[in-house]
Image (cartoon, rainbow, N blue to C red; front, side, top):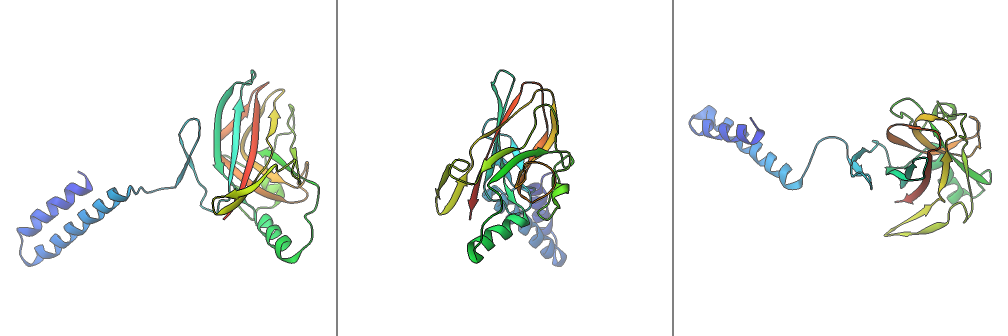
Length: 229
């Protein structure tokens, strides 16, 4: 029996009763009103979703502040596109600190490049904003052609810097991972200021909707779009 039906029955029973029925009638009317409001607004419970561009399947959005998106294009060994997926990006606490201090206190960000890489970080990806670098890179692949890919801190590494409606965004170049064996499973992608290892800092991450494994010859194109709102 639906919530709407229960509310209607409560009204009918309440009208047939006397003093106690008045309270039941009020509850039934409130229940119907609540249900109609939810249906009118199209409200659903649970986590908000971001739609994938290719499969139109819901993707979970982390319960933290998201800034921009990552785009993943998975290709088979013949370079045929298997899927295109987009996920909300999240900045680490270090990235928040760097953005504010560079803007308002001056200085320069260390290093000439950022590096995009993949990691396991448990399944599902459970990275948080304040995790240590070693924790964030848990389960990073180390063979079969895998290596973090550099994104230089200039207009080559970030060719787009432009207004996005009332906000501003910057978009990275597309970097490519190609497997010469098996890479994965991976559940996360990260942006780091180090080419390898767990030194330095990590600045952003995204959790994939499911564990992914690249077979021999398969490739993955990745880009980042960071929007400040």
